[in-house]
Structure formats: structure tokens, C-alpha cells
Length: 190
Image (tube, rainbow, N blue to C red; front, side):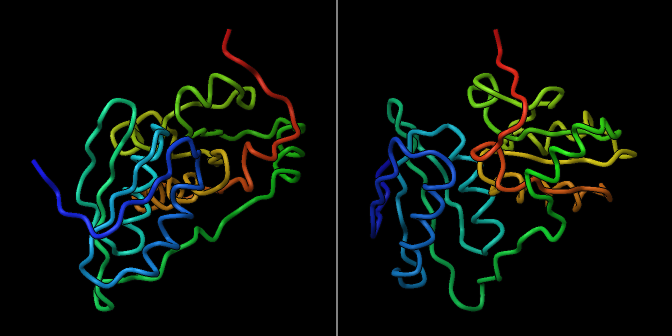
């Protein structure tokens, strides 16, 4: 199957949030209806691209994998299809969350990064559900608890917090800027 694309964007060897940042910039230069091929090697880019497209109104067409390269295809939306990118309103800064962690207040910490990211360092007690699996694994998350959501940069956790809220979770907070700037305790998989 041959897919006609108007622009190819090389995001290989970049991790979240860079494929999304580059895709946003390139989308601004495209005409409505044009198709972009985003080439990435980060496995988390699939969920990131899908989530971003859904939150902005651009059309996610699909992904093909060739070796270790994921080729994501997106169609730029027309003005009438676009929606303003939403940001989750309830956030907590890393430093403030560290204080809550130190006080051992009752909450559920959800880490939505990919398994490899989680394995190489996560906050003790964090529960891992990669963003791309969140929809099908929501039953593992307690609805009656305060839920803090974290990722590497705050982007996936923002989309995850929005998704949780859409599914009836009422006490959700996004931890920003996330693990990329985390200075608290970290556990590693052995």
C-alpha cells in the first residue's frame, strides 16, 4: 500500500514531547487536507500522536511500522474541524507533589510513560499504565481516590488526566513538569 504524503517529518531518536512539538510546528505550515508522515522511533509516539490529534481536531490516519521506525500519518484539519488544544486545568508542580509524597497522604499515583521509561526510573509506589493502554485498563484505577498522573514532561499525563475525567474520574491532578525534572526519590526495576 502506497500512501501519498505532502510532507515527511523526521523525529527519529527523539523522545516525548519532541515529536509532538515538531509535528505542531510543521502542521502550522501545511494547508488543510494535506497529509504529513511523522517518522519516529519512540514507541510512546503512537499514543502521543493519536492523543494530540484527537485533542486538536487533526485526523490521525494510521501508523505503519518499518523496522524500528514508526510512520504516523496525519491529515491537517480545516478551520471548521479544528478545536483549540485543551490543557487539563488541575496541575501540581513537582516540588509541591514531593511534599505530598513526603507526608504520605493517601492518593493513587499513575505513571503513563512507556514500560522502558518506567523501568529505568519511577517514583516509589507509582502504578504503571502506558498512555496507549489507559482506555482499556481504567478499571485498575480507583475512582474513590485522589489520582496524580505523571509522565516524562507533562504532555501525556495532561492527555491522560483529560481522558480519566471524561470517564467519570473526579479527583485528578497532572504532575508537571514530570519525571524529566523530578528531584525526589526514584526506584528502578531490577
